[in-house]
Image (cartoon, rainbow, N blue to C red):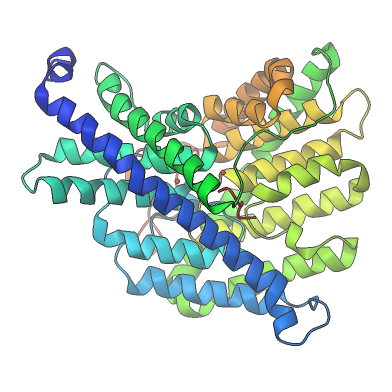
Length: 459
């Protein structure tokens, strides 16, 4: 293994840093444009198009054809374009590795058809892949004879820039990717430094585009939340409860997603529109049963998370449980075959479950939401450190006070999730006919490549 200090002092590494800084500019611009395009498409399809077609109000059945079209377009992008639209989100959150530039258009279009048309996934996974592919392209354009190691490092820098622009924090984006990719050892700093540089430059570009376009700015923090006190023994007991319950919900979502995927993949042009109709049907049924907007069940939940917490007093326990059930099923079906990331739906489900639990004795709203988000994200992402940061940063200044109980919920959730996971030898992970993977080990490995809203957040 080469000496990291020698590499750090080399001229080639300085050149690599320059390339990493430069790649942060176009990657962040592409990420911004992608997120804005998703937002515009969502608004056009769900808010504007019904009126343009002559409907006085949006029909209750409106999500059904939109989600069916989403399934068809996503299937076409997966089947007809290189790269299969990126990795299947049913296998868990992945990061690391280099994406071939030829795969980027398919990843872009599959994610656009998924996110813009209302499926329940987030933009983080496709943005990581797109950033990686653009990084590899930059290296090949700059020096065709560049070593594979250089392409890999700049690909990682592109991913850093894309995800940091999305999360609004270079440090949080770096933390997420490093934990997901399992990077460590003496070479960690050599990979981290170009990534941080690209993320920092990219964040500046993102802020500049916000200012130039007037689309607004992004922040993970939810402002103006009610003040919370210091943790109590009761909060600790509830943290244990969240950590024990969340893995069962998350495990059910994932197992259903993998089982549905095995039956969907052989006939995607038929089965994915059908899945879209089922997802739309869940949204329609929720809306009719609760009187709440059907769109609460659709989209990633990123832009709906703040209003959900702010308007917690307007939700009954029954409506919240119906939301968790409908969104959880829609999330599972979206994971099975569509293309996107698992982060924001997991956060939304954890928040909704936390709000419902806050009606119980001794559990204030804000700690309940934080523990729900931390426990659910840990189960779905298997990234306990990142899940803790996501839950605490979301709550702004209140996050520091609730962090101790979030940590307890996260640790318990992580351990219980591992205990629920049967150990599967890689040679045994095959379908009945031997053609490919069946139900993978859980938590899934986080070593392969893959991916919360822009200035104007995709929902």
